[in-house]
Length: 174
Image 1 (tube, rainbow, N blue to C red):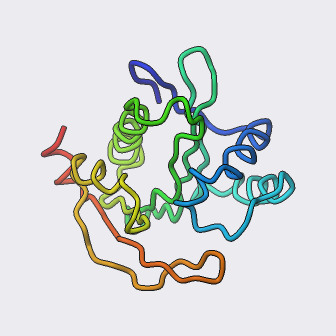
Image 2: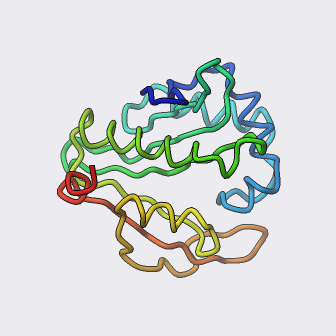
């Protein structure tokens, strides 16, 4: 997947080191449903378990010069129901936050989901405090509701907003 400023490529085993670094940063952890700083071994284990499974796809967001700046994880990809989740997307390099790379990545992902994977429905969820919800609305996602106490982190429960976009809605927005 290629746009003006970024490339979204399949993640490789070598990306696990940078994923570990990013997922230990507070500005990333506050929006992920992980309980603690993940070790390199935990990130590698997750990567290896998910990699051979088509229903889970892992990508790295890189600049045109190949510098990794973010991560994408797609899951629950179902050809039968033509639905899937964008489970994790973030810009991990702090210097690149707020510069439009997240939006650019989402536009590329939606094109991939609807035009290449032929999905009917793409869903995602996010913490109620995550400002990315505004971006998802602007891109055409609709709120489906609040999943109460759906995430647990540091022994506290948090609500998650559930959002989705249908193929018809995607076509209207492009």
